[in-house]
Structures are given as structure tokens and as C-alpha cells.
Length: 271
View 1: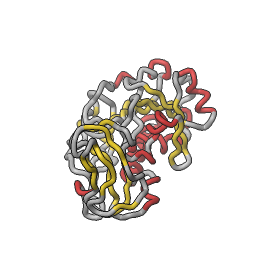
View 2: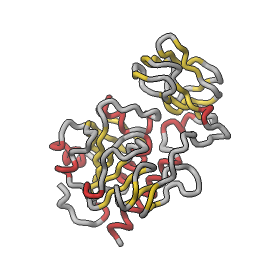
View 3: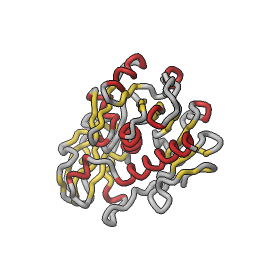
View 4: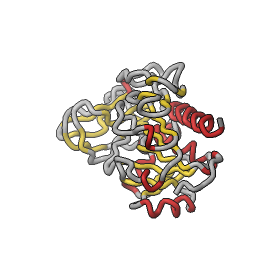
């Protein structure tokens, strides 16, 4: 499928994963007129669902800031979806579609904190987001995903910073803004993304246990009602700034990471 010429607008890019960060990357590349295709698992669990193309797995299509991803059932529909001006997304955890698509670039944006199988031979340029990848061994390049001075930096040798397990600070809050499962079970939600909440407000249940916020703000992310969860699992997050519009737009972190990816691709093919 990649019989296009090598100018940037003709490059075919395969993105593994379709969560928040993967969506930020795919959105920037599609907006820059790259031919983007995405793969995902059958039951994705993105928290920031309003800015995650993975929602197309459930709803068939998902629009984020003017770009739409469309679920397709086989690689036969990729070209037609591109002609519609949409990003095709398939249930394909192992990204086997690459054998048909033959992408110029493969981006592992699963953010699994470990390499689940991506390798340099998957495409002329392979890029891994965050920890778990070694540039020059597993993939050609790694993009730093840890907040701070180096966020979005292109790493050509070595690894990204290790996962700290501590969420980035927003208005001074880190772990406090995260909503976690009190026990194992099925999540039932009483609130929606974009709704305001108070500290210690009950927003759902898991079994008979209450799911509560810890700070006041707006729900920026929340797993789907009916999701099977386990104790301590991240269910959602509260943005203490209370700006509803932020729930529906790509974050500064995702934009920075996607900028690093775009630069890496252009440097490689235009060098």
C-alpha cells in the first residue's frame, strides 16, 4: 500500500494504540496530511475518552478537534477511509496490518511502559513513546513522555526516563486528582466527563463500594460505565482548574509529544 512517493505528505504511518497520547500523535500527523492508520485492543480502557480515538472501537467513529477516526473491520477498507478524510482504526493488538500496509513509519504509542513486540524491522522508521524502548536496539527513536524539561525530546540512543508512577501536577495536585477503584468489580458511574464535582463526592460505585473524588474540579477523564476494574486501578481524574473545555481538547503534554514525533519523522525523511 505504500507505493506513494517519499515526500512528507505521502508517508504512511501506523500508530499502535489509540489512547490520549496516541490520539494526540495521530491527530497532528493526520492534520499534516500524512496517511495515518491506527490499531487498538478490543476493549480499550482510555480514561480521557473525549480525546481518545479508541472510543471509535465502541461507537464506530470518534471525532477529536475536527479529525475523525473510523473503525474498520479489515485492511480492505483503509484506502476508502482515507478518501473519506478519516483515520482508519482496527482491532489488531499485534498490529499485523503492517504486513499489508507496509508503513513508512510505525509508532508504538501504547504507553505500556514496556515493549510488547515492536522492533526496528517493522518499518523504515520505528518510534517508541516513553519508557520500555531502547533507541538503536528495539526502535530507531524514542520520544520522552515524562513531564519536565525534556518532554517531547527525541532520543536517538538509549531510553526515556523511567515511569515515576506519580501523575503530573495540575494546580499543585498530583495523585490527589486521580480517581481510583476501591475494590475489584464492575464500575457504575453517576457522573460524566465534563461535569463539576466537589471533594469527597460520590461519582460511582464498584460493587457496593463508593467511588469518590478527593478534590474539587471538573471530571476530565472517566472510564466507561460497566468496565471491569481492579482495586487501585485508575478510573478517572479531576482537573482542579475547573475548565470544562479542557476535557474535550488535546492536552499540552500530548501536543508536545506529538510535536517531537512530527519532528523525528521530518528529520528522518528530509535529512
